[in-house]
Amino acid sequence: MLRNALRVCSIFVLALGFVLTLPASAQEEGQTMDQPAMDESAMDQPAMATEDGFQRDVAADLERTGDKLISLAEAFPADKYGWRPAEGIRSVSEVFVHVANGNTLMPGGMGMKPPTDVELPPDMPATMAWMKEREATVTAKDDVIAALKKSIAYAAGAVRGLDGTTLDDEINMFGFPGSRRAYVLILLTHNHEHLGQAIAYARMNGVVPPWSQPAATEEEEEAPTEAAAPEEG
Image 1 (tube, rainbow, N blue to C red):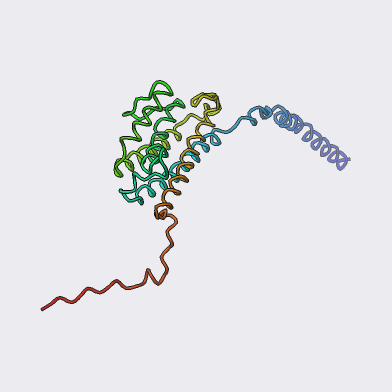
Image 2: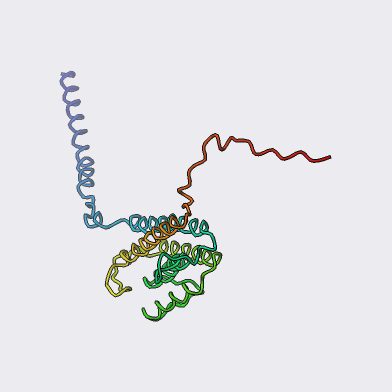
């Protein structure tokens, strides 16, 4: 009888333990089921890093292209700055100043803050007149290079600081509507376009772009310098 009683007590204790665990399990299951589902609309929103990446990539390419423009401007002899392939076509200096003008004016036309020493022309005719005057007056090699360097630094900085949420806003700068993003790309391609023009000018004048110069061979790098002549006496 004692053995039977112990068996009954054991079964009761096991059953009671099982029943006591049910509420906790049910509560845990309820917590899992009640967790809010991920908002699918949030998954569709573009990350700001993507927008920031666009400005960063364009600014970096502006700087790379600008480095080539500057090095090519430096490679041109000063007496070639007035050379032009034909009458009525921009000269060497005018091409570089034209790039600098675009870098200086276009960001302001897109709503970015212009350089502190530049007052944006009020309309397109005034803008064209301002650009032509600069091309006609900024002709010395050192002045052209200084204007080019300043414009590239400004344009790259302006693009980096552009609010990514405004990239798809529509603007109208050259007589046709387009997104701010499209006009940023026009700014970039403008530099590429005239880099190609400047390369053609350089080749026509026997100037090799610095980045196309042949690398020195090991023999040339290791060749001893010419010995100085012995002093007399």
